[in-house]
Length: 410
Ligand SMILES: *Cc1c(COP(=O)(O)O)cnc(C)c1O
Image (cartoon, helix red, strand yellow):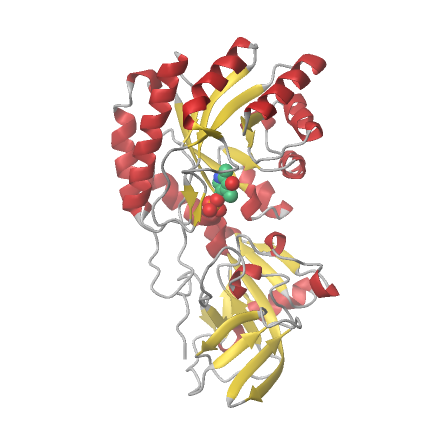
């Protein structure tokens, strides 16, 4: 038997059926037509954003990094909840605009932006977070050619990283941003070239659960932004402090308490370095806002035995929910929280079961030797923490199965 991560506390049960946003999992599947199905509960997203806003200092901008979940109905609701969207491709830029986000509230980060993507962002009036000197040259040339004034921020590769973070995005040689020791020079160049310099984007890492680590990274980020601004000799309109707020996926993970982070940030921003006194500040979060709101529902097709082990084979798999299989940015495979949706809260059977997907590869393992109620064909397995990096972060074309259904409730 192996442990699983904690089931998020927001899901209730009625007559043995798990509820998502007041609706039974089976009726949601009926409404969607079939399994496999991702359900996203907007009520949970709203509650998460509400708690975060309460915890954070007044006036701090909250941005949504939409690569975590770009499902259009969710984006449309999200547009009314947050202050800005961070996009990472021309495709995401288009989707954000279709969802009704004002391009002035969109920033575009990501290495390898093509000229047509830069042009689309400049024409729309979105801010480009510059990833290199070469990208700055191309953006300025497109500005000249189109007669538009590009809105440009400089993404800095900080000389520190977010401790304990699952995915390191800063510190040392990185494809993201411009090394801190060259960032001020680039900002001066874009200002001199007549661009609208928007400030700094400093993203030190992802998936941290320890408030102390985030507090430390934010303090270092503020100090770096102040030092670079002094070098430029200008107050940046916006300092994007990055994100890094994690969610509990695995056994032993505890939820991040944003209040400690908010208090420290409030203190730091009450008396900021002088050159940042007139600056606005933002954090940009992906998974923290949406991961817990999503459940992946997949039906048991077969239950079988091999060498004394029990396997439940489901109609979904890593082609929809790669992260739960342990193949998306984790070093050691650990179990996401899972449950039998139609036997929610029932006593576990006395034998562990391994939940595998329908793909013909040993990688397609969704839960390893977990204790669940007795599983039979037809049961629905719920995989939690599926609201971020699910459908669009998985190889949906692999093996030619149909794409998952997706649905927003609440
Ligand atoms: C992916 C990404 C995010 C979101 O990361 P999460 O871990 O989902 O919060 C934020 N900012 C940038 C620049 C990113 O690349």
